[in-house]
Length: 190
Image (cartoon, rainbow, N blue to C red):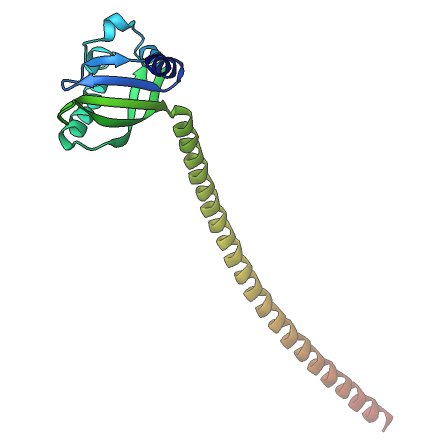
């Protein structure tokens, strides 16, 4: 059973760790040690503030640990760490570690690196925001074009009405001219 457990904890890419009530590491698998960047001898018995360049990162992780131990409830939370390569986001499942009497003596945790997923979500959200902005801009442009077309149509309608009135007036004048010419011809003929 121990060989099986050791095989699982040593080969999984997920972080597996056990901490005491003061958030000092009691057990850490190789994935956890790779994240911390230190050998097991430098990790065991030390808390998270001592594992990261920025003590605030360790303090935030320890605050989560304390909350879970105080509540006695398992939580799934996102935790952010900073490494020399940049920040990493972990989806951590943490549960109170209890002794045989049921007393909470620490915390058990498993964490999965979800950095790429979070970056993909951020990229997707950024693309979504850009698309919404483009749609709003295009809608604004189309609204402006529609207003221009409406104005142009109204102007064309006015010009068309004026043109019809002019044609009607021209026909009337033409008719009067023909009548005048006809009248003049009759007078000349008489």
